[in-house]
Image (cartoon, rainbow, N blue to C red; front, side):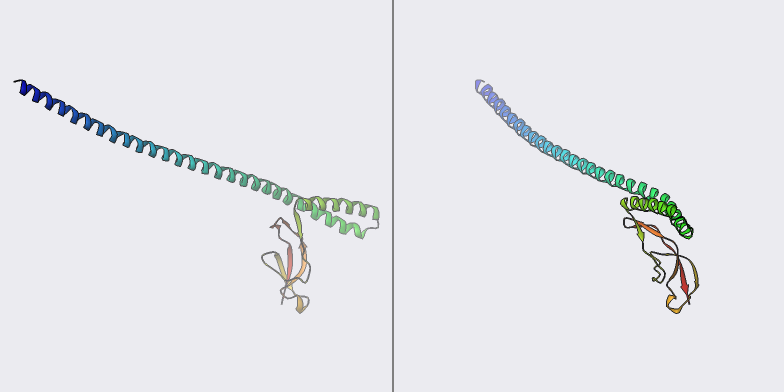
Length: 182
């Protein structure tokens, strides 16, 4: 009977060893799984961080661009509002040239030149157009067509009714012209 008890103790001990080995194997597998899980979590967090960082960079670029566009738009609106004043100065100068009062003419010319320089400093550029230039629909606005006074003016600008201006590279106001037709 002692022998049977010893065998059963040996069997129990052997079973315990096998159970311990299985438990250790399971523990190692779980640790590896946890390590993989930790690596995966770390990678996911890195991805989230990179995406968030990229999104923030895009946000900064977008708001910077919007701010610049806002300044350009505000400037464009102000320049558009000041163009009629420039036109009035030109008409006033034409009328003052017909009068005999040279001091008033000089005073208005000084004011107009100062006004032109301020507009020029802010980026406003006069579009040079004169009678005899070729008509370009991308630049000029034809308000009417008249019979050409000469065959050379057919399809060309006969008269400039209103001057055109650019702000930077964009046309703020197209020059309004009369075009000769044959």
